[in-house]
Figure 1 (cartoon, helix red, strand yellow):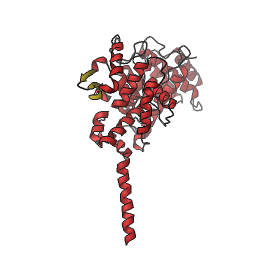
Figure 2 (figure 1 turned 60 degrees about the vertical axis):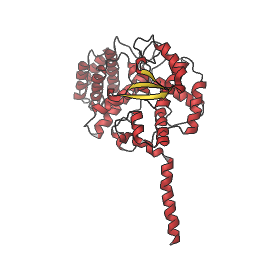
Figure 3 (figure 1 turned 90 degrees about the horizontal axis):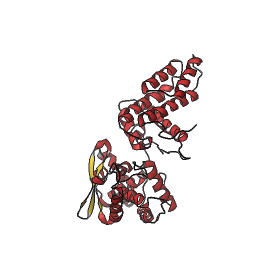
Figure 4 (figure 1 turned 180 degrees about the horizontal axis):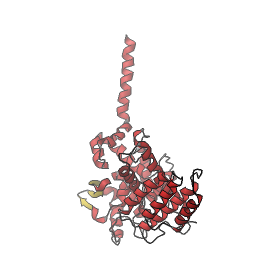
Amino acid sequence: MKYPIDCEDNFQNTLLFWISRFVRHKLNSLSNKEVSDPKTLSNIILELTRGAKSIEELDVLAKNARNIGLTGINTYFVPLKKLFDMLSAQRLYSMTQIDEELLSDFLASSTAGLSDASKKNHRIAVMSLFQYIEKQNELDGKAHVYDIELKNWGGVAGKRGEKLPEFMDEKELHIFLKAIDEFPFKSSANRNRTIIKLIIYTGIRVSEALGLKVKDISEQKDCFVLRIRGKGNKYRVVMIKRSLIEDELKTHIQNSLKNRDGLLFCNRSGEKMTQAYVSRMVENILLHNGIRKEKNGAHMLRHTFATLLYRRKKDIVLVQEALGHASLNTSRIYTHFDSERLREAADVAEEFTKKQKKY
């Protein structure tokens, strides 16, 4: 049986519902060879089917399952109990507001000081929960897709040498920029074009773009000034030339004034849009124009902006400030894309070899 993504009367109860269903699912799928009391297990599953009334009640049921031999349930429930507490404090109103950045923040804060194995278990638990929800939610024949991977959240994986982030080269970027204006969006074309242009022209995160409010935008000479609320509730300012986006942005601001939360971008219900929706838009444009990348999502636009910025200005501090990186080390990855500098290194080897032949 499938359920609407927001199936209870408030966010906290809905999250509790989904975690309860997921714990029940794991109890049915974990090996039961070591179970010492099958009757107790049956009663636990029955209680979970009815639904736990609180996270504390769910905690007791999980502990009871562990005590009769299903020790593997701890791997999943302990991280999810932390997640429930963290998300409950966020004052969210819909499960659709949960995105990869929010979960990355959770993992970074909740696993500090833990072993690599524990960090991996936390990631597995979070990934498994949202993969389960994706398969089990449905409303009017459609399911909400989270599209969460959590590969670069800063835990164990970040210490083992990640692939360099995907980006568009200048030829692909020219094709993409032209395609933004020509792509046949099914609805809300002005809104969609404005979101994508803001990201590609400023390098802001998708979550930062979707969190923008009309009051965060001002004008300064030939630029629009955007006040961005980044990770850790830290604010920064970015600028975008008016000539690049003036028509779209001003038209959209007029259309957004009726939004009750003052958001610049919202869905038809007046609620905050999801990162997954924006990523699907970007992917559709890329595929429609024959641009193939391993990662086609909207975050790739940020990498493209940063790469182009570093190549043109050769200023890693500027990259850090523009992208809102807390550490300069985070920005250094974009120096790997500087082919001119790498060519200088290749020239050194060639020059050395030529001199060697003289001896």
